[in-house]
Image (cartoon, rainbow, N blue to C red; front, side, top):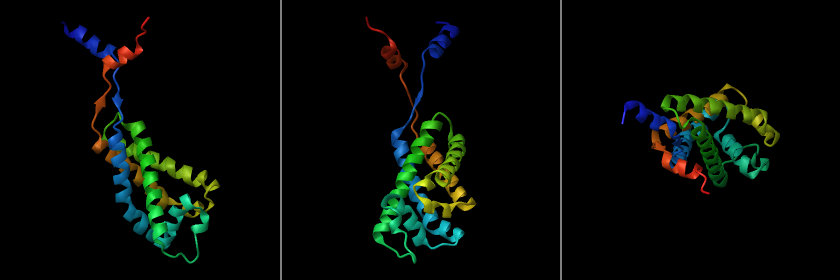
Length: 180
C-alpha cells in the first residue's frame, strides 16, 4: 500500500474528537470548589460588601429575592444554597466551554473559557437582571473579572482532565450507510 493511498484512507473517513463528560463533571466541581474562597472572601472585599450579602445573592437565584435582608444575617441554609447555586453555574459553564473548545489545547481552553466567562457576565448583567433585579449591584470590573476567571478555570480544568477519545470511523460509516 502506497503512502498516498494510506493518506486517502485516513482523510476520507471522518473522525471527530468526542467530549469527555467525566472531565466536564470534574472540571465543574473543581472550578466551583476552588473559586468558592474567591467568591465568599475576595469578591466581597473588593466590592466593599459583607460576605453574607454574596451568600444571600447566590441563594436568591434559587430561593427568590425575599432571602436578601438588611442587615444581612448568616444562615446555614443560605450558605449551602449558595454553594449549590455556584456549583450549578460552574457545571453549566464547564459544559458550554467543553462543548465549544474540546477540540483544542489548554491555552485555547483557558482563553476561550475566559471569553465565555465574559459573555456570561454580560448575559448576567444585561438580561438576567430582568429576573434578578438585584444583580445590577454586581455590575462592574470586579465581577466581570471574576466571571472571566471562572470561565478560564473551567477551561483549564477541562483540558487538564480530558482524556481524548476519537469517534471510530467504522461506526460512522456503518451508521451512515443505507441498508436496502
